[in-house]
Amino acid sequence: MNISVLSKAADTVSNCWGFLTVTDKENQELLQQLLQKQKTGKLTPTDRYKIPPQDMPEQDPITRSGNVNEVATGYTETQARLESMRCLQCKKAPCINGCPVRIRIRDFISAIADGHYKKALDIIKENSLLPAVCGRVCPQEVQCQQTCTVGLKFKDSTKAVSIGRLERFVADLDQNAGSVPAVAAETGMKVAVIGSGPGGIVTAADLRRAGHDVTIFEAFHKTGGVMVYGIPEFRLPKAIVQKEIDILTKMGVKITCNFIVGRTRTIEQLLKKDGFDAAYIGVGAGLPRFMGIEGESLIGVFSANEYLTRANLMKAYDFGSGADTPIALSRKVAVMGGGNVAMDSARTALRLGAEKVYLVYRRTEKEMPARIEEVHHAKEEGIEFHILQSPKRIIGNENSHVIAIECLKYRLGEPDDSGRRRPIPIEGSEFRIDVDTCIIAIGNIANPLIRQTTPGLEFNKWGNIVVDEETMATSVPGVYAGGDIVSGAATVILAMGQGRIAAAAINQYLEKEKKNRNQRM
Ligand code: FAD
Image (cartoon, rainbow, N blue to C red; front, side):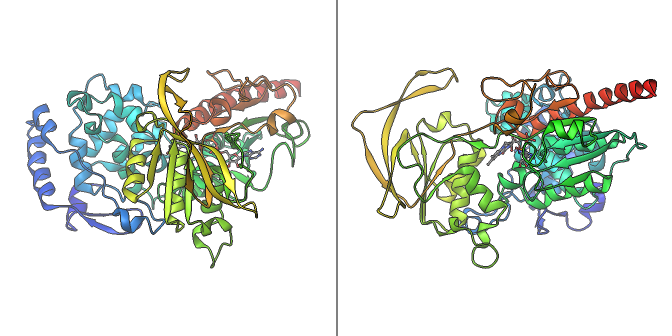
């Protein structure tokens, strides 16, 4: 695609919701001046520094807190070109070292600056199979953008080139293409991919590309892992994930849902009885942690996992017409935690009609692990932050329904093992917040099912699978693992990166196995 083609139609680009966004006139004039300079080779670093960082267009906070549509609506073409021209094209490209899958960031941004969007996307796809997902949910501010020279020059990380937004821009232009990668001739080797999260998806794609017979086994009735049941629609539209799944099926990957490995069949049975030659375990870290305080088993207390699954997968926002799940009845909600999961839960509660949503966190905002953008969005939407506070107990009525939380106030002490300052409760500081729903969002750990049913598989003390990091091979020959079940609760991009390493190693393993088999015959 080329700028001249798009600019003919008053420089409009449709975002993933199909709305048309017209870019502002000033931006268009600036872009024309810069393009002239670029043409004549006169675009200097000073010119680039002067280009204003492009804000992401968003639904306004009042409107969006009443719907589940995506909050950020995506750059217009003019914005994307301007933002890409802010990139200095550094020789050493420090941004690439900040990217867990080493995308050639400088080169894809240069292609956008030249109006070559397909080329930009092709560059991204060399290393990332899910750019529309990563452009939306990757924590770029602590990865590629943290090392951006422009941000460092201004001593302000928010002025770094918006790499993620540019990635999203080109990925969204490709949404209708849905091109299906070529698949090599059938090898006759069978691989089981357990779990359909981002790690499972990219592993399955790479294995199928090599010509193997690949089946994904998924415990839920729907594929996509946390991208579908955890991250809400307003941050990651489910249609984007579904397109990736559709590509897998078009490539010939088989998908079996409602299949719990460890219950329906064990890994041992898949390998020894069902004819699979190798397996990839990508089951994530789906077991919620609780606080261990009085009242956690009252009616109205949810783990964030359950709450978000009911909202996303069981469509609680459609309460009354399509989905009868009780969480939509909450009026006053307290969410415990300060990570992305806590922000997602709080913002979901608001969209499900809660009048008041409190976010209760025992450290300060500075220590919150959530992305700055999510904290900002949550506040804009009216979530009430209660920092340096944590519940001591949850109080119920005679029917065992939650009616309040009793909290303690905290102060910060010296840093603990995590490097963050330790929260210390202030004695006698108890106070009460009236709520009818509590959502516990203090983290997830590995589900023990695979450990309990797979003899010989080595785990660490946190219940995560031990792997050789070069290959993602586990202690069981032919069995590989990656994503949150290996790293603990982490990120989409890390799960994808590990999935690709595992797929490459499985391809090598199967090649050897095939040779051995042929020699034995
Ligand atoms: P998962 O995505 O966890 O998928 C695992 C799949 O395996 C699931 O579908 C599960 O049902 C299935 N499964 C489990 N056990 C079995 C079994 N025994 N048999 C068969 N199938 C099984 N990361 C980001 O980068 N950015 C974000 O903004 C972000 N926000 C998040 C918000 C929330 C609410 C949550 C919970 C996580 C968020 N994360 C985010 C983290 C990110 O989603 C995960 O790190 C990533 O999805 C892990 O991928 P995975 O492939 O390991 O598995």
